[in-house]
Length: 129
Image (cartoon, rainbow, N blue to C red):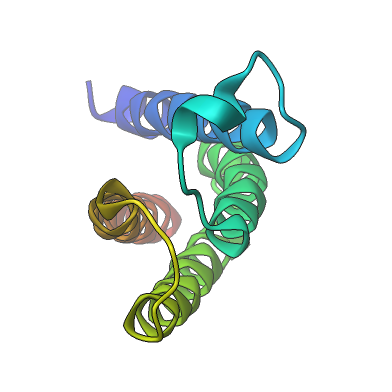
């Protein structure tokens, strides 16, 4: 069972990445009318999510191949999201129009990214020892 854990985590990471890629690209490129349904979206947050989606997909590959750079890559995504979240807080406090769900979604996304980062660290480190 233990040998399947990296693959299971990689599948969840890839699924999360694909979902993020679809939703963020649909807002950026106005696909399927999703932009109108999102309401007052914050474009730099959508772009941060889009970039993170690519990182998630590369991270899933790195997990399966047990590449040393995987943890650093996922950590860079977490840092990107944290910087974007700080920007969002500044934007909101200066009167920027936003949806409240964006704040909750960013907290969720940062938490999930940190969990995947920690999992990749333990999976790859344990495999290398």
